[in-house]
Length: 117
Figure 1: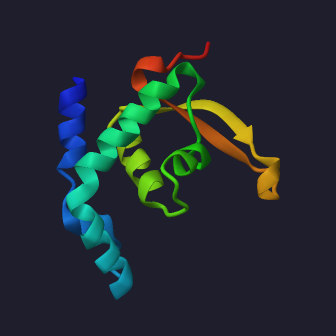
Figure 2: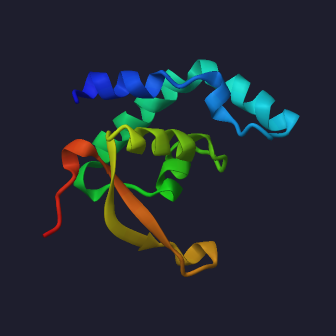
Figure 3: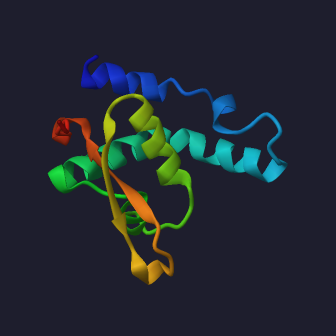
């Protein structure tokens, strides 16, 4: 699938798909407010991923770059991953300053993914 074709698939997201069927009213309102901006956010994340190159990024890096702690960018990154435009490298990075020893997945733009093995 071409880059444009994959991006078009991502952008076919329906507003109803942005929240669970049993979501609270506030969650539904939040999803509806972000819906008009999805294309811009997807493109911004893809640009960021390409800028990061082979080094990649984690969701922590993504939130730092876009100066947010909300799940909006992580959710859009996940959609891009499902469309095959963002790839899980199999690597993780730890952020001890966050107070835990948990590894965070490193992602790259598809063009920068190197298969292991």
